[in-house]
Length: 389
Ligand SMILES: [Zn+2]
Image (cartoon, rainbow, N blue to C red; front, top):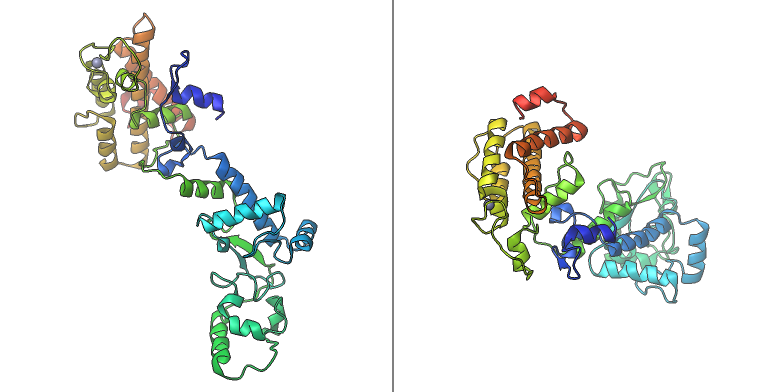
């Protein structure tokens, strides 16, 4: 969604100089389960791309660019406790990686080695067992190690663990440590596969930019909204409309006036009897309730009289029905709200009014075409008209 599209969608009064922000930008960026629209922030996207450099670096230690980085920034390529000592692009990448680590969003140990043949992983210095490298957990043994950069493979000879100590480990705390270490690594099976790096933040261990981006956004964007209901059967614009409806962010007259817009009347443009609020326009207005009666009759559903979309949501959540029935009911609900809004706008902006039976026909047509093009189960038009659920 471009910025232009965002402006049209989320601001009111396109022609006037004054623009109203209808929805907090962070609510649009937040993921669906955090009540947003899952647009995702550019910042998280950028961070996720930068983090991928560490993933590449760990996965391809023999690549030329990794060799170059290590020759400039040392064996850890600057990704160690001291950070990167020079200025420049790589230093900024390392800085971002550290910032995400220290803020707890993407800890360094979320990327960890999975042992294959042990040819890529350093036994002491890389994190491959537990959450920290073995050199920090078994510091005493590490100091006794002759080759502190040794690989996992170097410590295995003919399927057995083989050590190379500066002096024999035959008693005291060092021996106790060694026993603990052996317990930890005892169950390890060294395999023929190559070593690789897995991300504990994703379900399959791979590094997905979009997944990490969503993860960072979920950490950074605090949101107390209920999760967004996103139905794959209805078009995107209708999903967004339903999201705005549930959050009460549609430009009906009460909302316009409460945002300081000078309008002639806040009465419902259809019946001119009550204030036009969300619940009035979509539920209690006589025009709306007539349409709901037709819709409920068609669905053959005994639904109590509902007076707001929150009430509808509560009813829908507790309604026991099959997945197909629930999907269809939601599609019909969305089509009804969508058409009621069109009916209302038509009434205000077009001289020719839509008739109620026309609104109902449109609900049947739209819901059918959405289900037909995106739904999994097919239904014929005649069956649809007879019984929708
Ligand atoms: Zn009304």
